[in-house]
View 1 (tube, rainbow, N blue to C red):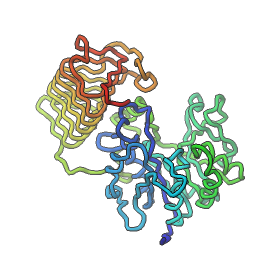
View 2 (view 1 turned 60 degrees about the vertical axis):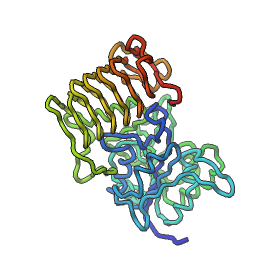
View 3 (view 1 turned 120 degrees about the horizontal axis):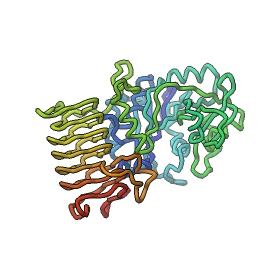
View 4 (view 1 turned 45 degrees about the vertical axis):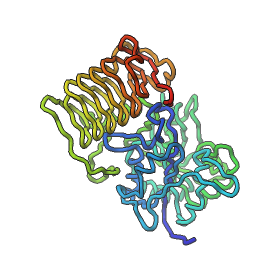
Amino acid sequence: MMIVKKEMIAMLLAGGQGSRLGVLTTRMAKPAVPFGGRYRIIDFPLSNCINSGIDTVGVLTQYQPLRLNTHIGIGIPWDLDKNVGGVTILPPFERNINTDWYTGTANAIYQNIEYMESYNPDYVLILSGDHIYKMDYEVMLDFHKRNNAAVSIAVIPVPMEEASRFGIVVTDENKKIVEFQEKPEHPSSNLASMGIYIFSWDVLKEALIANAEQSNLDFGKHVIPYCHEKGKRIYAYEFNSYWKDVGTLHSYWQANMELVDLIPEFNLYEEYWKIYTKYQNIPPTYMGNNSHVERAIIGDQTGVFGRVYGSVIGCNVQIGEGSEVYDSIIMNGAKIGPNCHIEKGIIAEDAVIGENVCLGGGENRENDTRPDIYNNGLVTVAEHTIVPDNVTVGKNSVLSGELLESDFPGGSLPSGSTLIKAGDRR
């Protein structure tokens, strides 16, 4: 096998199910979920890589990979279609012995040691495929080199009252990590791990091999503690810009809504740090005679004939005349009929909302099956769902499937309802 020398390669973990996003991830991995009108979540770490000068990226997939694989292709949008390096999809594969699915974040990396060795890297960057942020990984690498570190962990300051929700690191005055605290009840620091690591290659390889038999081999639980116990130099690289974990429906909705703030904290339009995505050569947006739009992102080939306020609208969407959309996410290919009222809705790809439909009314009642997922007043409609004419759906509800008028007794569904037709999955 030919060995090609690369200073640093990236390994992008993109196999997660994202169960806390409910019906949005029934048929796709979380990194493939649309974001910001025309993008998908994985576009952000991939764009960070190419903007940081990293031209070799292994994307580790597992759960429902088809949509993700199709989106990435050979990496053309990110200039990652290289003869040497570029982007490589790395699914689990059958071996002579010990064949298994990826059973943990570090196990997925361990099963691809041969891929990493083929580039003989000095450093390996480990990334998650489900966060929204812009980071220059070259600056983090400079920090790693400057401190002669074995491992550098990107951390972000969080409010102390929220620190117990995160993996926390405690550092000395030189940013060397002296203690790890996993979701501590009484945290000693507010520096939360972002799940972004730079390893010196020999250190990573040693730690993976030494812990290979661990069940559900994980960076936070096994690899990093091993390096710490062995006296490796581990440093915290503090990141102080926008970073959002969109792992829940509410955080996903919130991150999209922040894009349409008057002065958005996360700017999609910076010329010097572009976000790249798979581009489809489709017609421009059309605004009808009676349309009205305020503070919104509108994707290509969308027809707006109603009124849109503070919302993120994808590509090839139709919003019917007389309809009003407030504080909502309408994904690619969705069709909203005339005279609808949608408030705090998440309408997934290719869903069809009939005429005179109201989504998001009524009292704020807890969801009857998964209040941990469907909450904060949102109404979630799964992809390819059909909602019939003349129905009203309350807050904290979820709809999936080819729904009929008979599914809505009296023409309505109260707040907190779960309506997932047989054959559909949560």
